[in-house]
Length: 135
Image 1 (cartoon, helix red, strand yellow):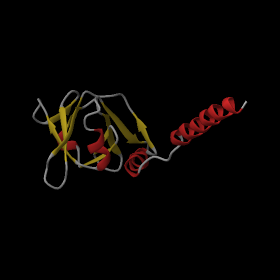
Image 2 (spheres, helix red, strand yellow; image 1 turned 180 degrees about the vertical axis):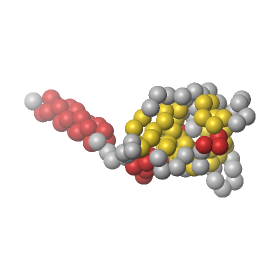
Image 3 (tube, helix red, strand yellow; image 1 turned 120 degrees about the vertical axis):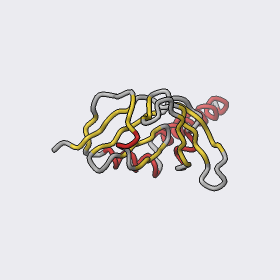
């Protein structure tokens, strides 16, 4: 009887641990992205975004927000796992674009550490989803 009870207790404790990690609160960068998008309405995804419309970048795990003021934000869910850690940490984002004046879907993105500039990862841009404030 004890032989069956010990494995059952181990399985129950593992199940409780995995449920606990799934309900964990988001990290600071993810919470900041959620606060930025709160109250904004999403539109149809776009392939490209002109660079002169962007005033600030905000990053979180697998997400880059291109901010164009209080009422306009474009969300980009990057493709690939390569720059996930750098985006979460707030590393410098460097993009390589084929179109000179725009960020476009498929452009390469590299993350670099702020001190020293060493490469921390690479991925590519996805579609740009615009978020605007309803007036």
